[in-house]
Length: 456
Image (cartoon, rainbow, N blue to C red):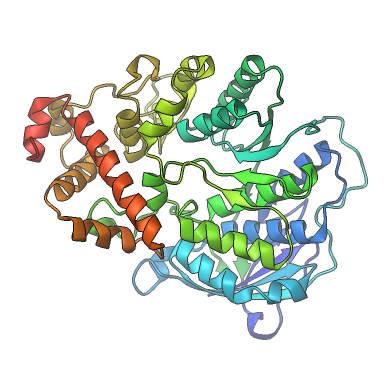
């Protein structure tokens, strides 16, 4: 499939892209829209450097394509063949890393990418006005992605505990989540008054592109490219803070490694953005185009339980941990009409919630409310063969597999996630063991459930 990205102006696709589907990034009438340019303006920037703008436009384009091109049209219902023309200001520099982009994106989304960069003179970030609102990032020493989940919350605590003053970057998916993120940031400001904590939130979304065949109106729900967009946004803000500003993506290594729970989940939709291979590839692209910022995950070899235990005694953790949202469908209470005040809320039975529960075994008193608090055999049997317990069943299968595998099989599973050094393979094998022990302890809270799994 061929796709053409327009920036600011409406250029007609040419050459092999003549019949391509067209996305547009404009302030009015666009099919891809974002509020990050307003954030730049609130930070006092009427225009950002061309390389930083290009990086964001590339990330935004990948995000939109990943979101709007359905995998159902591909030969295997997963792998899409995507040819895309993206307008950039610094074409020569991006041409030099074209293959690296394609390889990195293939690893990230599981698709076959062919990217063409074309010269553009449109400046998306340029604004001729000032903003009445102000985001004061003076004094910030780093940027950290902040979803409002438990890992990013603990990551912010870790940075503040080490004397950093972070600018926390979030995605404004819906107002109630943003409110929680803002409240957590206020807690940081109150608990660490000698340092600075700033929260910046941006929007991004996409409508269906148009082509000669009509509108590409069947969306895709896997959205692996979404987290790449956040990284590109974070780099642009790091550039405003200052040259060399570090960017952190705090996420536990178990989720970052992302070993499929079962064989039929090998095409998993989960992010690969914190896998070491991806982070190395992304940093290499930044280096080659001379963007002087690095992305790091200092939790790469920590289990979620280890992360929690590092910060569990801080006052801000005790106060704020219960407000964090780790759930894959936090708005479910709203759809079930449980009341407007009950969402976003952790469901308690999706994969992220189960790993969250296993991480909080030592600090249960501080854990937040769940739609399903207890994980019991009765709950599982009552919802057997339903979407509700799909993740519970998959994690139970993963635990059974782990209990019956040898060291060679574990090493094989780790290696299958992507290229890793021998040292990384050893560390991830230990991490996997640690997390599966935590999962077993979680399931063992109900003896009938652990006996059903067959690992008692």
